[in-house]
Amino acid sequence: MMQSKGETGRQERYDLHTHTRASDGMNAPADNVRLAREQGLTGLAITDHDTVAGVMEAMAEGERQSILVIPGVEISTRASGKDIHVLGYFIQTDDPVLLQRLASLRETREARNVQIIDKLNGLGISITLDEVKAGLGRPLRPDESLGRPHIADALVRKGLAADMRDAFDRYLGEGKPGYASLPRISPEEAMGWIREAGGAPVLAHPGLYGDDELVETIVAKGRPAGIEVYHSDHGPEDEERYLVLARRYGLIATGGSDYHGVRQGVVFHGDLGSRYADGECVRQLQNAAEHGGR
Image 1 (cartoon, rainbow, N blue to C red):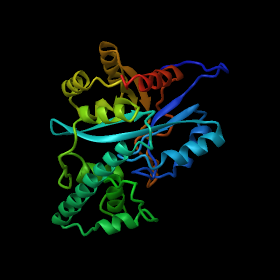
Image 2 (cartoon, rainbow, N blue to C red):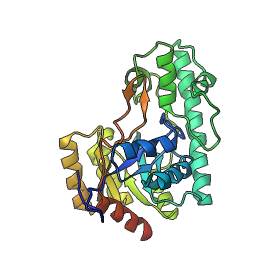
Image 3 (cartoon, helix red, strand yellow):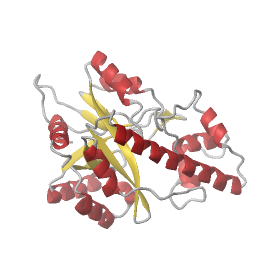
Image 4 (cartoon, rainbow, N blue to C red):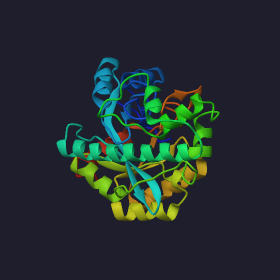
């Protein structure tokens, strides 16, 4: 990983990709911050899917714990028939245009959830969206988002999958019988939204798309500030390949665990802090955000 030292001489480590229960994570935002402190991190980013609902709670806890919390988001997009995710850092979470846009994305996500449930019902699986929401153990706020991990969790509770990974492999992953996708904005459009909200856009986990030609096309067209080189699902060869790509296009090489918490005893995707970026990376992202997100 990239390494740098702060004013105290201590190595700075920031997990730039974490989720909370505001989307499909398991933890309250403040719990992610406390866990970051336990892991010895300098800071973390809260990057929930299509919502910033967890950011303020996390930032408040960050002040109490002396942990830097970077306001972020992960926006769902689509390109060449694939779901592509774009991370945004140092965004203005109270920007009314951004909030309206994210609300429209959550409406699309809810419509997709309905389609997934319909497909599962067509497979003879008795499951409802109300059951999925009941599994949260609390009311879903209007500014929070429900995703496939919640549906996977319900399938596991019904004994129809061994764990979340099994649920995705059998039913919910791309190309599986319960998978559904609706038209979404392009990665380039999401990058524009992030810039307009004062942030720096970063292409998330390129290794998950299985198409490096598409990844390079997105980078060339969208010109994000960075690319997520270090991710829980990237091996050493992936990291080297995307580091080369980052250098070719002058992108910031970022890193994060994509931590979603623990479900059925399994961490998804990786432990908080298991992938990270250094202080120089964070300063570069902040500088990019201050200069138009590039």
